[in-house]
Length: 94
Picture 1 (tube, rainbow, N blue to C red):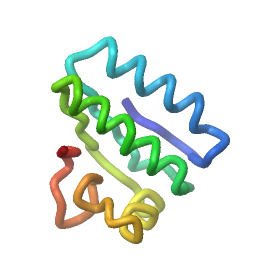
Picture 2: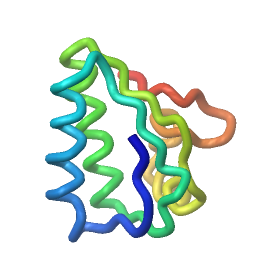
Picture 3: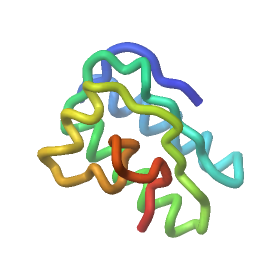
């Protein structure tokens, strides 16, 4: 699944429902965030929540790409180890 454009708190409810539906209907979730132009901490918290759910269900949550905007939010939050940040694995781990 690819996400394109601006992601901020206003998009979190829709993105949350979309990601959980995709996770529920599959054996795992591959997410490409390489075309995200804006990302805020609300989205990071959402990604971490979906990651926890995937781990609880024994499903992989693989980030196949992330944009500079996503990485800039992840680094100060010390979430680089969970996100596809250069130097880190692209699989979100528990």
